[in-house]
Image (tube, rainbow, N blue to C red; front, side, top):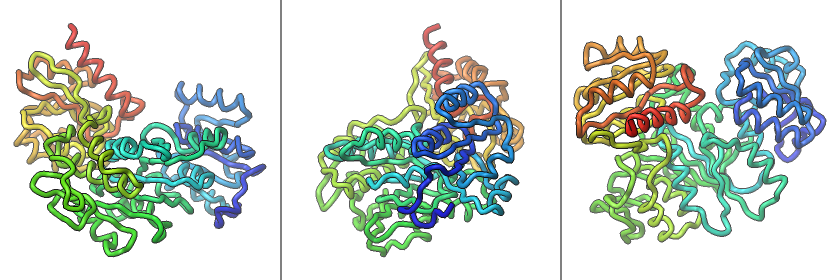
Length: 458
């Protein structure tokens, strides 16, 4: 299949293989099926959740194979891959040698809309920022919708819009580096780059490759589109030409060259004060940066300053991101399950003044846990570790901090309940992926909250 010219692509009657049956895979399969393709979905896994999804897809004529990738997918005209699948697998080399185009799910979905896309990426802060943008842009006639890593696949929303034909639509995408690896035509109206710090080094051989994947997001943009980026981030500052007419920076430093800027502890625009920083509900400098980034994007979309300042004053955050759970016997419990890399853990620790019981662990993503030692010595009473990464974390930290190894998250919460004293903070900020013991970070965070609430009501 030739996909070089976007407006000439037609998948009707073609053979389309979807690799991976998560949310993005299911959405892509349903969209391709609706557009008349002969669809096969292939997933190496065989868990109950995937089996249930496969039964639903088979009812609408989609072929599904589980437990392995067979040669059937090598007869396809097009591959659409889920973000969790690395293209280093051997079967990808066979597909490429057969001339099969390989694209990401967001690339595929973007073929079927001409409505504006705001695409947000970064190592940290994506979920908070897209939610801020959504609220700031939630005015007529924008009709915004959150898609991508936020929990709803782009393809499923595009399918709904093809069926229901809304008059207006603004897509706000949270995207990862994985989703940027296989794009051809994907072109946001606004690309927002929050930061680039070490993450996913189990997948990328170096920071250079990781940064390159992130920056794929802007490769198709023209001077009619916008690039918004963090000028406090050294990697982004080096990689993006700040003199381009379509680039716009944001900064938490006192820098009046940005649309929104800090002056005398206030957020300002055009020499007018919008809001005092102390009025923000979100703790930490990182959330100040997220707020400025969202405000910049919303302003470019035509949001009024009054709408932007209202959201900044009232927004209280998102689930699983420095989320307050409960206070039990004077001890505060916070759920930061979405912190799946060490930079997020650092940000979380720096958001609190009180001494911390830090719950760390899960499936290792290639980070260097020794980086945490200076912060742990300064602000953390005890580190509680669990999951697959336990041994690696222990080797890195055991000579530097108080360490308690437990079997699972429940034991971690119970230990903290017994040991923490009034005024302490118990913080679940794992610094690892969740897939060793949980389906995703949402399930991990939800179970943590259940354990805490059980203790609170005991």
